[in-house]
Image 1 (cartoon, rainbow, N blue to C red):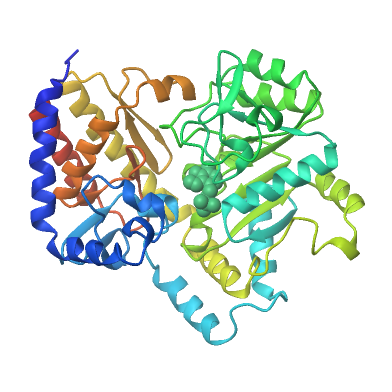
Image 2 (tube, protein in one colour):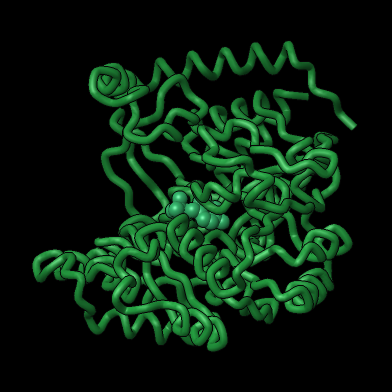
Length: 449
Ligand SMILES: Cc1ncc(COP(=O)(O)O)c(C=O)c1O
């Protein structure tokens, strides 16, 4: 296997960093101006994490491409970290949303679009009842509240190195059996060990040991992990894990916010899972803020028995803009026209093309890396074998290498997700877009070895 000379990597990184600055004078100017009014010079702190010295400012995005303030065109394989998995501003959604904007955006009253969306989600995921929020984070938080309320148990269970949005209880990792706040956790409100049990993915014994305490309200999980590389479940994992969850009186909340990339019904439909609750956000409204959580008949009955009309506005579940008319119109148009089986059929082979192209270059250059795919999403990690759990995947992370490869791609017109090496397909992505990435990846690999 090839070992990479870190000095060489450093020099290459410096060369790419200079090129980036030289080619983006307008973004540099805007970033400088932004320092005067935006904390850290960006509207949201994650936007600082791009590989260049400053983020590229965007003027326009359509389909699988966007244009930056310096007039450069990019292939977008990040797609707003799934928020734009539909492609940027699909025409049919843009039209429906524009009409709705002129006819009332938010009322705290229902519109018929909500019923359409509920009926569609019921068919996709098999759960009968749905509620809406503005973000997947909120949908996860409310699902957890419901699970705690109806089971009268205090703890939740998550996988080591999971990510489910900015949900306090989920920022926990486990080291030698001890639950700790995840590195970088800003101001955790309580000791994470009080709220959370953490186990490794694909470890049924560990899961059973954690559930045996009979204090776990719910397991909140992505059916395949997507936020620390792509980690696929072992063949029988979910069948047995779901049985354990039932046996110990806990609930299974499937977070399909990213794993919707597996197909129109996410992993739940693809793998015939039977979650008690299900969460999805981001792409569901083509990027117009909106998310949803669904529940089984049994959960619905249990929560109805404990919720009282008089207190429902102050019970900790809801939000003034949640379920607003605009979100629901965007979701309806997206589900009806974009996140369709036909479009998934277009996206899947492109992810295979990405996967195969990258795998071939890894092999050609003898790099100790691998690439995994889940439906329309693919990602390479810096370990030789596909990781089986969050611990393994996190141990292989290589921040310097990641930044170099991302900047290399950016300088050659391709945007990858800043937090890991993820590439996502949308219905507008083309084989030429993928080949552009494969050829620059090959070039970078050749330079590195
Ligand atoms: C699996 C998963 N769930 C939930 C979320 C939270 O989404 P949002 O930031 O839109 O609330 C994310 C965000 O990356 C996610 O990856």
